[in-house]
Image (cartoon, rainbow over all chains, first blue to last red; front, side, top):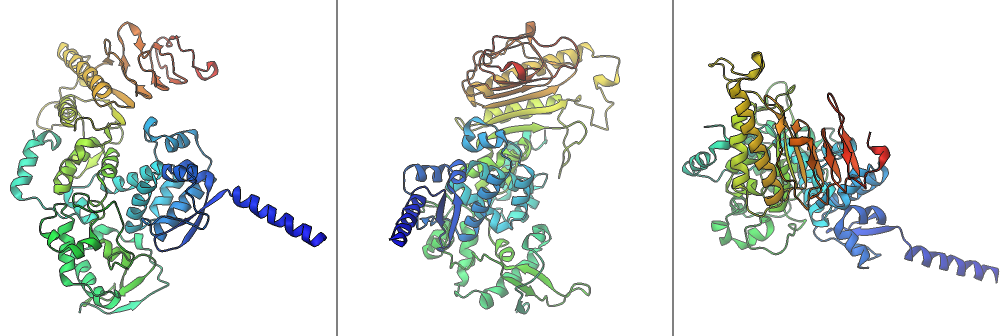
Length: 186
Length: 359
């Protein structure tokens, strides 16, 4: 009798826990599962916030077919680190509503977070952040890329990012004349 | 064959320890060519590499002749393709993870016998990831660059030609202590170059493209001949005081500033405004109507306003204002005022301002 009662209680607790889960499970394109706090996901990603509010979160793993496991791991890592860092008011406001807050410089931990990424992983993360509507993460990753461009000549930028120059000489000359004001040529 | 390959799982060199600039094409190209048959399980049609090169041009054209290869590689927006979707993970070009390869070069320099690349680095060097990003993301990315550098990205490739016109911010910065250095040398904004540049930039921006922020913070602008070694410096600082001409030029600059602010607020719908520069005196922004429903943040460091009054009552969204003058705006909740000399500002008709925060 007592045993049965205990079992019933345990089942009830499990049901309550499932309904009140404070994490969401995300599934990468290659089928790997990641858990992230529901609160952080809703706060940092407009897409995930919409899915949570709309009840389209799958307990067995919400499929994110556009995001590979490496990028998703970085996304989850970012959410967790964000939740753990002392949230400054500025950061929260810019995360919630990009439209009303101007850009705030990346914080120290955010710099470290993007600095350790490889070239490939950085761009994968940009795409994941864009896809998930994570404005702050998109800001921080794009800011990092902009720093890789800053102060460099067009040739150097092309080399860093492997951009192929598909202009003809005449076209380039035309652009430089048209935009002489930006090339200090006048 | 350019080299032999041995797998190295516990290699110490992290992929990002390699500066892309140091990867010479002549080193990378043979590496890619050699890795392909040995390391990649899928056999690639040799034409695939060429097709990929074409697909990053953003134009399509010849690349469309080989749709199968494009399905695998294409991520650039101008081509007709379904909503952004990553290439399948089995794509030979998307190698993730910690696969590391030792590459022995044919005739290595005596002190370097082995150069280690991660496979990701090698693959990256054959792909243009940045041009494949969606326009929106590139507009955001450009907003973090100084405005002149953002405009000059137009020469990178066709894909980049007009992106600067929709950059999400206009940033003109220059600190007096650390002059910014670019490949063209030191950047020094002068009265004339600043006016010329900003007039063009604001007029030629794409109509209706959102602008989050306009920042013109160059501190104290120098005279136009200050940096030209061939002319004697005509800068007001080297004389006893501003000449009538300096004063006239400063007035011109104030008028321009007023127009830029109006344009930024009414046409570009800027949400943040930072005007921190001066010439031979403070900027006079009297008569500039600050009317904006979007403006949330405004910073003025060197400005003065006619009749000492700055009226932001027409900016209902404004929450953060940094300035040094008399202020009147009903919705401000946070205020940062620095007073170096002269009178303290008078704060009036700001019911939302929490008393303890105005100090």
